[in-house]
Length: 504
Ligand SMILES: NC(=O)C1=CN([C@@H]2O[C@H](COP(=O)(O)OP(=O)(O)OC[C@H]3O[C@@H](n4cnc5c(N)ncnc54)[C@H](OP(=O)(O)O)[C@@H]3O)[C@@H](O)[C@H]2O)C=CC1
Ligand SMILES: O=C(O)[C@H](O)CS(=O)(=O)O
Image (cartoon, rainbow, N blue to C red; front, side):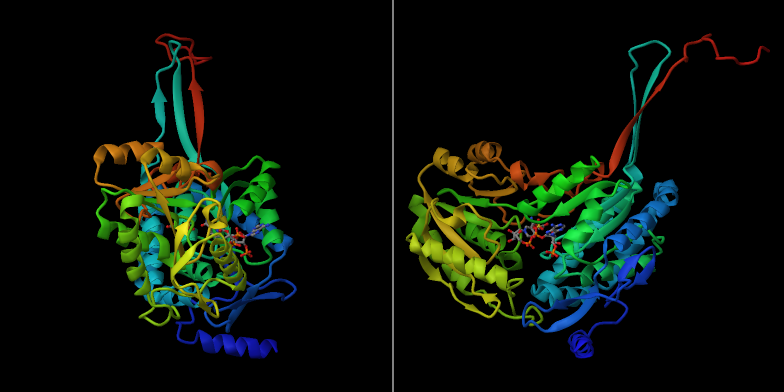
């Protein structure tokens, strides 16, 4: 049976250059199996076909990966920043050169349309390029000492061994967004990718290897989430832990990190309000809502989760938005004409169906979609949504767009902020004073004004409240992987005792 599995897997990915399709973990610069030979299957979410498998590493093997990162740390952080920068730039160049192959692999394991997968590869690579440049700009400080003859020096140094657990929805970019600043700062890195999408991470490891990034600096471990996760969150040598995923799991991992007081970054769930005022450019708002809602089939934490439309433009918006959504084509990601791929698994499909059923039972009206074929959920617009529905409070993570109606600014702000999440929000208005009032009043880490696309490497990506801690990308993203060291120097006054210096 296992042989058959592998045969089918090879058939499904035989279009790939085999140097990028890796079915082993990457630890200490070596490709490795689990000691007991255990493997985890990986399937294509579009049709359930087995693509291949990856090792199910255990706790001891995960600890060995941490040990590899620890052994590589002194030499890596001791390199001149310019050398680390060059190695990251070479990694960026190799990823960019293999963008199509990496996108094909990503689409096979995650399902998103090839065009989106290619964008994700470029998006992930943009973080590596950005932090290749930032590596050379880690600067300290000299501060005025309060006492004569003293100096206050501030050094910024690499945190040390870093670990990460990443999600299935951006299997390339979420790793690049963490590994790039870590390596730029002089840290070494161990990542556990989602069990459903490990191949993109392993392909990144292959290209890191080809770029000449030394053994032990970048490691990819695969295996049971809890087993591997416990080592990465509780191992005393890991000084920094970064996670992207659900708030529920983020809380658990944050608690596990407490035992060794790790520095943590968490990028968690969202419940983004998308607010359209009656003075907005309506066609632009419709296009922005489509972009913010249906990217990755709605499976991103910054997707528009609640679309609030001011009362007097609600019918016109609903009509135009439904027309645009109805034009979205659903299909396999490998079909270049597809706009919407499959949901990641059956659990996600059932959850989406439950959210829609609840909304319809509470008076919601389906304007288009509402059906599914296998894992493919049709892009759906639901009118007459209201705050008592489950989908007003839960992260939908599917191509389901509920339209809420509102009267005035104060009301919509109160409703938009009535959530434990605080990741992204969007507002469409051409009234400059209103744009500033609303942006400043929204309790979110990121606000898109007259745009539905806010992700880029130059921006500090992250949330507040229960959407996370810390920022990724931008110059702020590097600080997550640096420690500040204060050095007090005394005895510098002219003629001060030189501390035992020999007389002339
Ligand atoms: N903020 C974001 O970007 C994301 C938010 N989500 C939200 O989370 C919901 C559930 O999606 P899901 O993929 O299940 O998200 P999870 O948070 O469950 O998974 C994210 C990552 O965490 C891992 N993980 C899960 N449990 C543990 C654990 N106990 N210890 C260590 N690692 C663990 C997963 O591994 P494994 O794959 O093996 O389960 C995966 O790699 C989505 O519907 C969405 O609402 C999901 C993904 C991204
Ligand atoms: O745009 C992004 O970076 C994605 O939204 C990332 S995630 O937060 O959804 O994983």
